[in-house]
Image 1 (cartoon, one colour):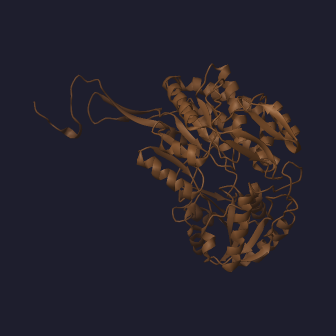
Image 2: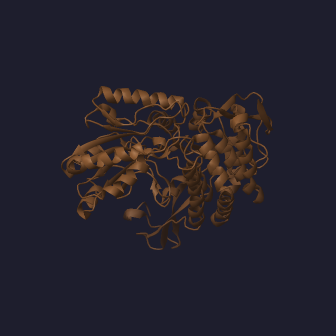
Image 3: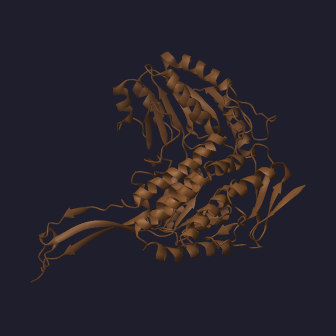
Length: 528
């Protein structure tokens, strides 16, 4: 039995089991109509009867929540063209005025933090606290961007030629493509979109196909704020498959920058296609994050960090803790504590209080997890706890798993997007760092130690080779104040805080001659 809610040009099918919940969330998010696949602003929903349907499922139950109509190539072109047209005027709006727009977006997100976080939980599967945390991250980046709108600094420097002044300034770059992954269905968009907007850019967003409703909800919030400012086309949405919309975006010369979050395989192809047209790319790809625990570490502190880092979001974060490298003298004690903690992890409906781990995103992810465990056992790994499917809870549930693993095993070098944690041992710090760095990914890293010299060595140039390195803080849960991103196969991109804003702008070097003469640089004489 279906309950139907009319959309802009199509019907959103809400299945009975989740219909009431979904309708309530839409009402709390102040959404009356839902996009059939593409949007360019408050009145810019594009309905195309030729678009194919995309189903959204609740990973906790396997039930279909809704279906939306995806954008066709024609709809995609309309959206990008609107972003191009709006950029021509948006780039000339003073940056502090652009910041006021983002300030109001942050305020709008504060008003709907609870229902938007619940929608993230319903469609993606992370627990409610993490869903709310993701929306809070959106609010935080809006706050950051508002301040940034008055701090888009260039530099001045002295010229060797008398009567000359040299400086640099930063100009808006153009429409920015944003391709996001399922695991953070709203936050990663905001990292890019809020910063790009205050930099004077417009954006075109392609969300992951597993979480279209979260993107649609965000676009409706954006549209309300845009309408208050008399704007459209600053933030644009296109829902469609990677093989269609995604391929068009990375090949589209109208998008001088594409920010891509996804797997290494997908990211490598995206980078090649973007580079072929001499575009720019921000790549946030795989993570195989290691955490070293030294002989002098506070084990209780390390335990809490490991538990959240490895189990949070069911191991589906790019910053998930995947490898523990423990000093031989404390490894057994730490492992015993971890096993005991894992045995107490409550798995189940992520909307329920007390649940610490929800489902994987889909049944494909479950199958990949089971296949990885088969490989782990074949390569000498010993499962200490977990390692089983939990079909009685739903189709996408698995147990969080700890594996005692030979550090030479090839599978350790791979990123398995699942709650599988490897435990390995070391004797000397240099050995631990070598083990840590011996993977192709380089996103996040951590060490737990009470020794200042050990901490500094880990953070030095001969320590962690990752883009993010922490001391007595886990690998997961980065704040927005610093740039987020990694090295090696992680892609080298940076988003969010610090000076990541420069990626969304173009640098211009300027020289002004006020001398009335024309001396040349380097003392060159050229004729009379």
